[in-house]
Image (cartoon, rainbow, N blue to C red; front, side, top):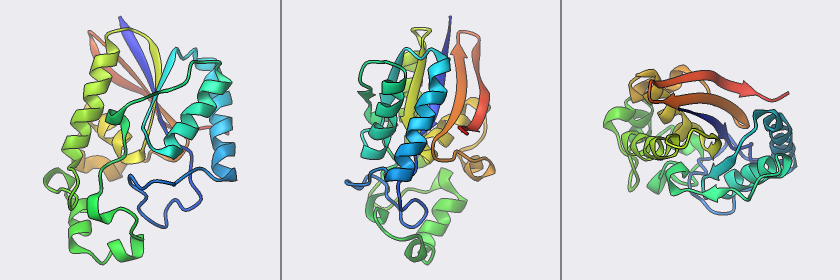
Length: 197
């Protein structure tokens, strides 16, 4: 039995790339992000998805809701395993400020041996997200998991047998789809970072 997972990064919020949103409340999709989510929903209609699981962050829930509406599915189920990395004290800081922090630079060059201040490590993230995938893989369904870039990169690294420090070697863009198949035979990535037109 094979389960298919569509790993979806949430659509872009208006300030993506300017500050580290992390688990900060009130970060929602603007008009452009909602349009991305709507296009993503239309794209996902052809995949015969049976259920959607989402991060508890607003931007992920909005993206998941757009997919559920387009695919006539039940409301998405919230899963803490799909939550954004807990960036601790870095949450809400601009990237200009973070780039001057030696601990931030270490985090971005050696995530396997780093932990966010007051938060979690990428190995913690990988363990929680892949724990969910392993649990859901037993049903052989076609599922959408809506999450965040670093969380999805942690899952992809695990499937490909890459160290967590390989995270910058591939992209997971906002509103992208990465397709993964998991079964008794093992697991593989089918598509990576597919963008909706």
